[in-house]
Length: 46
Image (tube, rainbow, N blue to C red; front, top):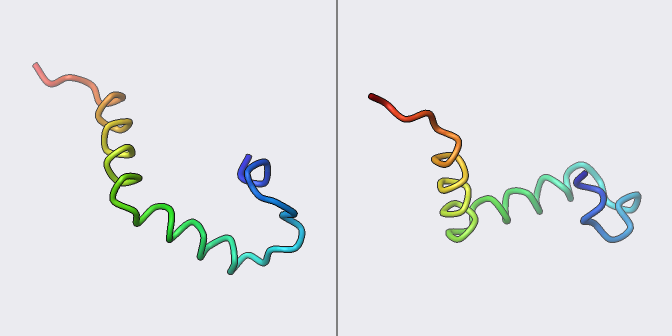
């Protein structure tokens, strides 16, 4: 699935992809969205 978002994925190394993922997932807006998504799936406590 990740490859569908990358331009010319065959030209990128695993290290390149890891760098991109680190940058993306350390962004504040990404962290906020991830938190919301995880809370959405969280079962409610009685």
